[in-house]
Image (cartoon, rainbow, N blue to C red):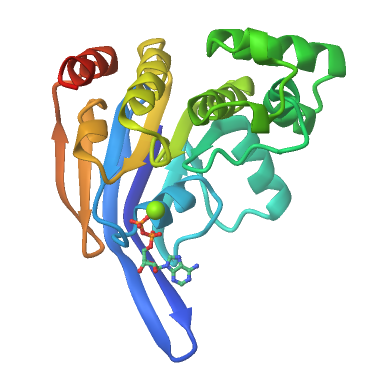
Length: 240
Ligand code: ADP
Ligand code: MG
């Protein structure tokens, strides 16, 4: 599904440059659930943004679903992004003046889906994340966990091949993090390929494979036994 090889990325600020990714190789197969781990500043978001076609590497190759992602014009890039990728961010990135339902329907609007079908699909995904009763509410009326559920529904609405999540539980408390991870695990159980960035060990162990980044390189890439988020939540509750 995803193949990258010898990926490099530097940032340049005046006469200074920072070599963030120094030759990254890895691949993700359809149906996998992978976490990218590393301390703050290790380049996790940089890597995810390149995979999400929000940024471009300086060197190396990136193939997504058999298509070489290179020198695409913005229109083609936007089309691929819309068709292949769903994004989930730490800060939810919902549109504040739009209802939960309208937020979820947004990517469908950009795909040219007609209004009635858009609303029907958006409602379906809100139901899927357990928020059908909150369809007409604004983000400001929702809790953090509910906002992230709306963002997950939005990411799913265009039925992307891959979900990319950058610290999806970074702004949530432990219990809510487990609930959100429970939903993300369920989406992976149904077959969706998921790539998730985190700096928390607990969250990484809720995926099926952990890739560790350090000083611009992958230092470890291991299949792990997946901790189920509902169990983790019950354990946390039993220990308070
Ligand atoms: P992480 O997500 O692992 O915390 P990032 O990928 O955000 O790390 O950042 C890696 C390094 O690159 C950090 O030192 C950060 O300050 C730097 N960096 C990130 N984005 C930019 C940018 N747009 N311009 C300059 N430096 C950047
Ligand atoms: Mg980051």
